[in-house]
Amino acid sequence: MKRCVVAIDLGTSGSRAMAFSQDGEIVARAYSEFASHFPRPGWVEQDPLRLWQTTLKALRSVLRAVGAENVASLGITNQRETTILWERETGRPVAPAIVWQDRRTEDDCRRLKRHEPLVRRRTGLVVDAYFSATKIRWLSDHVPGLRRRIASGEICFGTPDVWILWNLTGGKSFATEPSNAARTLLFDIRTGRFERELCRLFGVDVALLPEVRASDATFGHTRPALTGREIPIRGILGDQQAALFAHGAWDGGIIKNTYGTGLFLLANTRQRIVRGKGLISTVAWRRGERTDYALEGSILIGGAVLGWLRDGLRVLRSYDEAESMARRLPDNEGVYFVPALQGLGAPYWNASARGLIAGLTRKTGREAIVRAALESLAYQSRDVIEAMQKALGRRFRRLRADGGATANNFLMQFQADILGIPVERPAVTETTALGAAGLSGIASGLWDKHTFQKALRTERTFYPAMTRARREAYYRRWTEIVAKACD
Image (cartoon, rainbow, N blue to C red; front, side, top):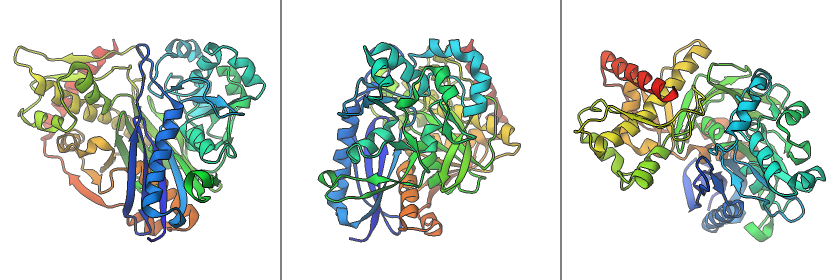
């Protein structure tokens, strides 16, 4: 077996491990699913121990396939903003993880909105329940005795990358990197540090926070008892930044969209922090001493709407069925679906928005609702791209797509049609894992930048086929409907 690099991809619904060879081929992969729990409307929780167990299971499966002795390094990518608190002494979680989708702190965020100019200037973010700070504060206030234990230094905070790193190293490494730290509302993206003023504003004790290292730093070594030998952990990135890295967006000019549970559009703005209405300014990565920034549009409900149609309304039996159902209709029959099931994210950031299906008639069947749900992903993506183009002062000439929903050819074609630009789907759609592997492999010397770029192959390009008049009529109607959802 040739030398390889292994990526751990900590998603919202499961943990994945993938091994990539020196020529960029996938040589082993494993996936282990875990559940989210919804104890109250708007609440989303996960079991941190289950997250760790599924990660270890997937990693060990891949290591058995490739041999631990052949692994040059391990990279980590993760769902961002998800908040985990655990005991420094024992490593036991003190409460369920509060997932990035959770909305329980909306009232807290409304009270803090008057501070948003300061927060945006420092962090690049809006004050929203999506991010980690108010989740930390909520746990501090609601877990008995926790605030006292935090003040005494007994408790650690981390997004999933920190939690898994802690466990892989046996508690020797308590660290993160800027693309994840920048999602907490506590990190000044200009100085590259957690700031005490922001911590005071959100009621978070700085004793909780991990060390921040460069994204391509060495974060420690795995415990031999877990992985057979000490494997260096080189490179950590938030999942959307990892996808951006996988698309080769080191020098700007590229926009990517990840079609997962949510939709996440990012463009590298290099060493310039760009502000845009309804958009997030964030860190792409820090490599060595150089920090690259990104402009991001985070859409809360993307592929998750199909899960809701399957499990909630039961109008869909499986994700695979969605494409064939949508294709049974010659057009959308005037039906539009605004999937504001947990409010709306970018570019609206309206926590009060609620889901809306418009244009229903006696003729409307399951197919029209499923088609409208798929089309909503494309419309929401155009909303963000319009805002990004205005902020950057230029138009994008193509979109690079990744994530599980890109397997749906109807969606990809409709996305190209509604944008009026080509949409490229990569050969490796697990780009978050590929990006983590790329960063880690370059840091450990397995690849150089040019060798890694060879792995970035396009599997198919979808070209616009819709007339401009029809495209604009469809989108104009969407903007009218989404405005009603925001009322």
